[in-house]
Length: 384
Image 1: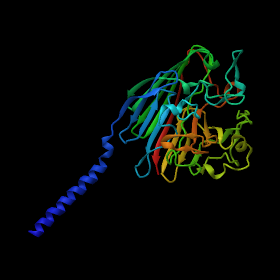
Image 2 (image 1 turned 180 degrees about the vertical axis):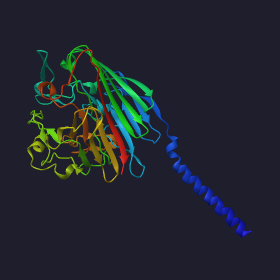
Image 3 (image 1 turned 90 degrees about the vertical axis):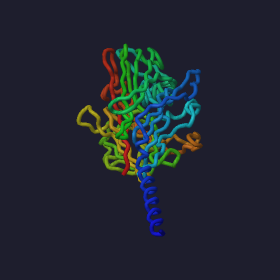
Image 4 (image 1 turned 120 degrees about the vertical axis):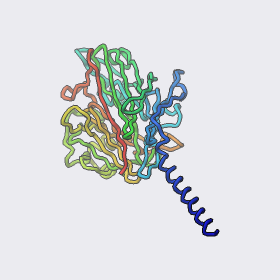
């Protein structure tokens, strides 16, 4: 009788153990490709703002809103399978309305800087707002980051997503032409976030679109990013003057602290007495991506040793701006009360080169009537 009871008990315990293990393994299958929409408050002008949550079958989650096309959160598994939010930002819309440093936004009409806030196109001189010393930065005072975009959710063979559309009217922020822009975020089952950019115009205009998420692969609010290992697929960069405008030179990175052709800790050389690091207060430069053709090319790879998270950035763009969060100064309180201090996040902004309208030798950023601008960037997540 005792032996029988023991056997029954063993079977019962074994059954419970198997059920528990199978339950744990079954967790990912609970996740479905889905898009969820909810209200996220109102913009400064009273317009409603919606938040879209994209989830893939592995549980990776992207939340993006119609205000600025902002990626509000990006929850990615670490090497132990634990999800963590890896982008800096705010828990509520209000935090994004008080002029934060472009957390997670779509930047345009022209991402990065235009010297002296002026350019000449087809013999006409255009004057822009000076919102970065003498220069225009990220589209001006009311760039794409401060607009409420129209949104459409979708499901495709690649995954689930949301498309943000915006009409930038002729003369907005000083730029010519009615520009129709669409930016789509697609989340795949391969843990890729695909960014597709598209635009048309009825007058020739400069155009440079990018995404300005601040990443910390250890988790937002976890400290600085100096221990992240970075590889940039670039043998050259565009050095800048004291106002961070490119000089026009394409300088080899070899033998300088700007050389990330092999994985290197971001903090390894950031404080060296190198004139470009002094001017930028760290890394805030455009690297010229090594490419064989105009197709999707690896621009950057970041690995954070503690979490094991890896971010690869692929793009059709000619450049990538690596920014090491030099202007974060502890005055911004973000998610869950986290105070964002110096170098608590990094940006990898795929782009055309800064100030291209004033540098004829740089790849052209002029979009003309009858043309369709198309560009793609992929954020690919994994662990090691």
